[in-house]
Image (cartoon, rainbow over all chains, first blue to last red):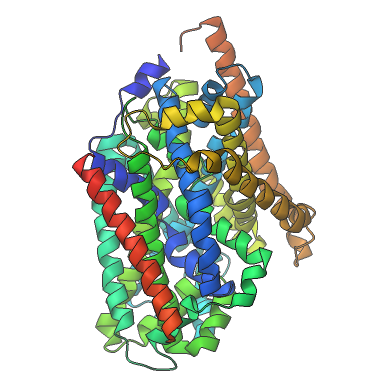
Length: 521
Length: 31
């Protein structure tokens, strides 16, 4: 039976579990998105709603998702449809269909995210070979990046280069996934996370000891940490901080639940869940905030770095940093090495998250189609490569940003809102509290019970309402599209996501009907 | 760097670091 097959897989060690969960959470968002969001939203002012969001949104959601995952796992479910079904004691038919979001969203994000992770692998290679060295200003470096991203622009590389790195990355993810929980995912995390932290510490040290140029590293830190008190009353800053909390902790996705489903019934979730959240925050606040922005301020000054940060994560993390590495003393050796450390750090951060994003689909295919793990890993690789080609070929039309908005931004809040309603109000907060504390090594402070029942859901509803009104509706109506010629491609992009959802719903329906008939699978 | 920004940064980074070390220490001890 599928439940038995799921139960055969377990985490090998507790440190392996923490590193794998931290690897899931620590991703590109910690080193690229966080500094840009902080810079765009009032610097130190952003940090106040950010920490409030961590306490009221991030930590409760992290505990809930660990709890939901472990609870579902005890019934043999490794993906969200089955977990939502048992949360409602199998009494509400819609719950399992809503749970399809927890499989399709991470799959959609996995596909385009892995393509971005592949860019980091490519730029690690380009740094070592010095491929972009000689492009000494932002405009030239930006053109280099755009040419790499756009397979029709052969001015720096043939279109096959981006495709090759994407295929290599997908193949690596599939290989890791095929090796199983303790033999693949856990080993990757046990090797990757120490490497990530080591590289990050070296880069922090290098940035803080950079000789002053257009600015200083201290000015860069001041830029991030000086509060603009007027911005604290701006709702947009609060929503941006809460949104960052979703990205960075990977909550509202479905991947934490799948990882937690491989826990044993009485394994701790409270202390281990808090450990992974804290480790992620360390990577983000202490390390992520001390590399890209301070380095950019040293080379471009505060005004220049602000301008670059407004251009987004890739302008800061790839374009500006590419110029920074070329300006380091002894650039031919140390600049190349620093470039490699930076981009490979991003690659490691991204690849551990990619593996986690693909895991719900693997578990789903094992449960609902009865595939073995290796076959499921191959199927995900084929799906990732096939649908990923859509992004490789049509990147210039904004199809990747479309998926990122619906599945990687708005969808997270929708999913988390549904999940907390199911957990706190339908499953019941008293049962939920008891479930979280089964085998717990940490007693959750009692104040978190009303927070989970009322405060976090209200926070989520407000956020959902705000985003729906200010962004989702205009985005849905294509009001924000400046290149009108892109609209047909964006509709195809949306249709593919809807198609995946419909296939997921159909598979769940078929599987539950077979279970009801008692058919062997 | 202003004193306020420096203090805010050090306190925030310090709290996050203490929380991380404390949680990881307890997790790895198994308690």
